[in-house]
View (cartoon, rainbow, N blue to C red):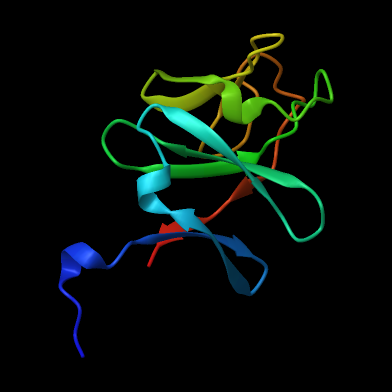
Length: 116
């Protein structure tokens, strides 16, 4: 049996080492917002869908406060680079590199993300 494409939900997957972890259906992501995903090691990833359909994933832990809140931050762009601003102390993190735009000595982990 073959399903019509509109009945098959695209799955968001996160790369962890050599494997891909299924996180959720793409329909669970809202453009311009993030969601937190629990990882097998007990950590969390913050997954974002921008308004043009690109996905990003970074560590959800804010290195300045220690709180797992980056998924709740506001996304924007600076000099053409996408970022998320922490909802607590407002530091901005580049969604592609994980580098803090406000303190170059700080960086968060980034993850490769895809749909399947």
